[in-house]
Length: 80
Image 1: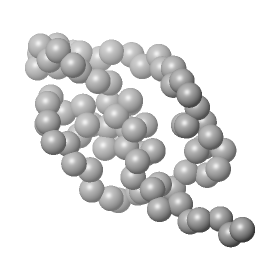
Image 2 (image 1 turned 90 degrees about the vertical axis):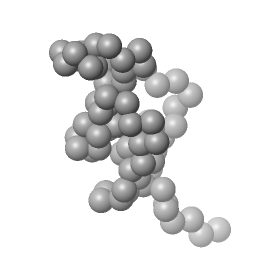
Image 3 (image 1 turned 60 degrees about the vertical axis):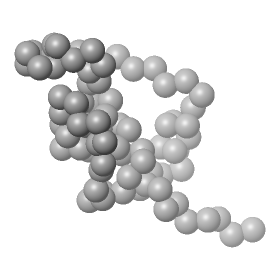
């Protein structure tokens, strides 16, 4: 049986297995130095957003941030 081409992202087989583990533990530092980021109740570290963007997109694809909070997704996209 032929393998289907990966249309979702550019991850290798071993990277895919790492990301699809049943539990994803992180130790991202919370950098809330900017006043807006401190005031936001659901701030996510840009490094986490970068990891999510890497998993769900290919390089140079567009990323939609429908809620456009305080820029965590924007910073994550720049890191990805």
